[in-house]
Image 1 (cartoon, rainbow, N blue to C red):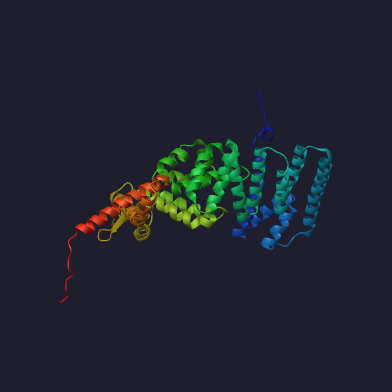
Image 2 (tube, rainbow, N blue to C red):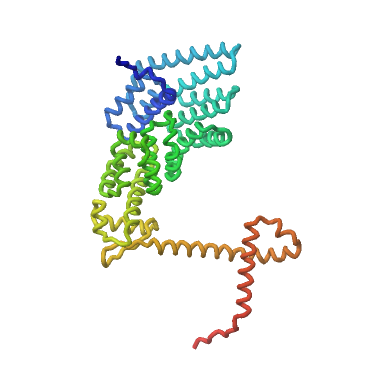
Length: 440
């Protein structure tokens, strides 16, 4: 006997988060339309979803921002429905406040706050969310509500308020957050790091969160994987990328719906650099439609090219510019210009032989140079401490216990500085006196 099951009847533990994610998608549509204002399909989709959810405040905001002619009758109809729901719940709240428990009051307040969020009323949503926190509740519920407020700020792209509130949430989670809230915090932190262009931290947080992602209110799992793939190729080693992304079944399934990202990851992992550069061309259009990646679009493309060049050169001690250009599917002048720029910036450790049109890597020389630079830096620091050592010598005679009270790193630096000073003094005493030469 065949058993048919309605998909809608399947219980989903993250149904509430996904519902909020559908609201967040409307904000993404608005962002995409701001980039391509003449896109009629995007405009119709956005307005249709606003009408469907009776988002009167957000409809007014969209019409003002995009300079659309407002349908006054439609707006009034949606506003009447919004006012009816708020009035009904506000009256219920008044009755519950007289005799109900804190839990009952919190339930109604959260319903009102969530409704304000769903219709795009930013200030009132945040106000009611914060009002609910004043009642007695668990620490986990407080963290949930603060994360709801983060969702509101993300929906309206209020970055300054988002960043400020994120600090509050981070402190709460670090002090008493459980495993789930720490995972959700990683997603919110990743958004902040993307906006500040710190893609190393984005990669570290998102790769660690892939198996346990539950923040569907912020963005879909596919978008989450997109951010993990792009940031990881930019900043992580090839072995880490293979471990966290290439060998992940969750990532593999997600990339089936994102062929450009799938092509980008597989071509980089398999060292197919011509295909990798072709994927970069398609990636540019994706970056331009993403609110978190668009501000860094040129940086991302440049860093991805740099990572490919570095990986290619790691396999050779020397290669011709022509062979490298052929591998990437570009012209020799282009690869020459790219390498010259990255070498001059210190991003690629190699040198170009203009006579033979070859590229020679300098890995060994680079390690030695880095070591010498560090030694010279330490030496300069110790020279500064010589003065401190002299002063300390005087103080030591005044108070023999002073040295013992200093922190160990300071005592070590003072000891080394004193030694350098004594060596310098001895050298000057032993050096023979010389008369300056008379210029003829």
